[in-house]
Length: 220
Image: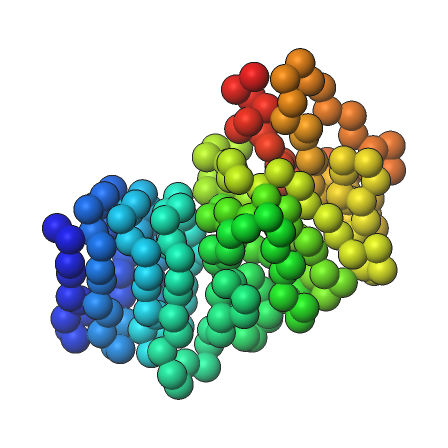
């Protein structure tokens, strides 16, 4: 199947509905759809562009995960729940990043984004991602499709604004300033390098952790 039209009778798309439809190139949503669940387009490698339904109210952060061919997401006019900022779907209510599909050498997360939600950067193909001062919370598994599975293979480095009140980077570690918990471990994926030295500023390890370059490092 290469093209699909969702009829007006459908208001929700449940998880993994179109997963592994590797030849699917085009999907036409109706404006009555209010929810698109996790993994809906998992591994739909032929899709390039999607236009969100006008009345979408709930979009899972992993709806488009492991879809590295994604080039453009459009928002239907009149939607008051989501907006698109610099190749990133953002939920207006809490200014949380839902899905980033940027590519290139460097990507600046839009100023104003406050939360990086889990799986939101699993599809980002930029080599370097810069976190602005507005980000107050970084969830776990931001850069992977699942916790400790299917990591992003494109992002090589992540930085945080030096003037951030919430996060700081020390060496190859980004940590939460409030409780000194590990947020992002940036592994140096280089032949012969098989260790990661965590910053001694980290005092707490919890579920809100992320690893950069894990897949590349694990293969060496």
